[in-house]
Image (cartoon, rainbow, N blue to C red):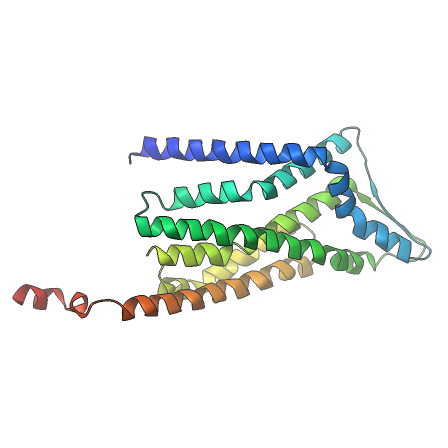
Length: 256
């Protein structure tokens, strides 16, 4: 494919993914109140447990309520449309798939979607504990009125970051299966990979404390090395099934 053809393919895949997210966002808009209640429940539960303090969210601007509803709806659309945009990403990363690679692509989508949702679920159930720890430093009798935009942006980005983190081993193993990323290359690049993971965690957790970053970066590092281990086993299996005549040096092969 020429560069123009690659760009057209990228445009088409982006359009398909965007339309899927928008369709899911419509569902999120319709169920906005239920989603908002679930996301802000940790604050209200903490407020009912505290004595002498107030915890709540605050809409500081006239347009805050609308922008928050739009962001929450897009967040729901991103999760609901995950089977589509994940398949579009994989189809663009590995174009011109062979018959074997197409089976791997289907397995990738089957494995990636539940892992993405599982990562989002883990983050969702982690948020109440994290909110309780961070707000426990509020002095007795003080008012802790969270800006709605800041709180929900933190929560949504934290959930999406965990979902993406759970996709890391799937991408690595899938690229290994199609012969693009051998396990030895992964292992050689573990230092820059860990640094990139921590930079990603710092960007996706905008709070100034380092604990939120470590909460995300720690599981990502574990998943990275787990993917390296699985890829190593797959490479060994592939080498074991490799015919012996393929290992003959070129000069000996020409002499034969």
